[in-house]
Image 1: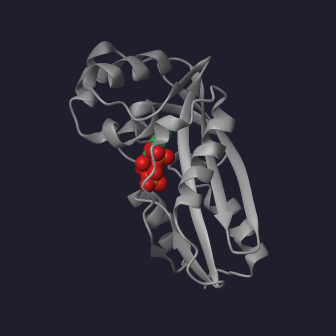
Image 2 (image 1 turned 180 degrees about the horizontal axis):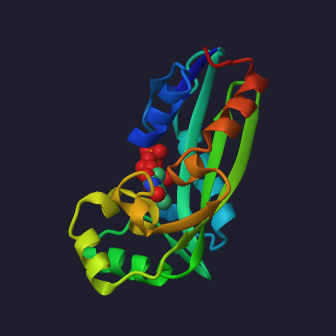
Length: 188
Ligand SMILES: Cc1cn([C@H]2C[C@H](O)[C@@H](COP(=O)(O)OP(=O)(O)OP(=O)(O)O)O2)c(=O)[nH]c1=O
């Protein structure tokens, strides 16, 4: 079988490479604003399905992998911040608190579909205004849900996590590998 990654995310590509799963990229082009549900787990599931179904299956040996990640704090969903002020507000809101990171994943072949959601709890230290301002001045927040990257400079905000670290980075890779085995694709 051939794994097709329906994603532009460099992190998702790196995580597949890390565990030696060969893949090719076929990018989806979807309007994510059409998914308006307010429950974060349901939202990432629907967004993963929207991306996965946008990419055509060209051969019955193919499995399409798509995913979506959001941050959830109380009743708010944080996606990628579009401006400095939005990034500041997200990080300020997470300062000194725990939040959830949800990733929805879809695996799809011509005869089988698997959709699941993983969640990880992340706790931030109380942060100073100066720390947040200097962070949002960098490029790091703007292509990441919640406006931070746990794998980069954002690591210094993190007091602890419960759950799969790789889920925060955008793909719960160990669960993905296990679900892929149901399609008879194994890591090399
Ligand atoms: C919280 C967090 C998110 N992220 C990233 C993972 C995802 O790539 C991104 C959330 O955006 P997504 O919309 O899930 O994905 P994407 O736009 O990067 O890629 P595509 O839709 O093409 O698959 O945030 C980190 O890299 N580190 C973090 O600590």
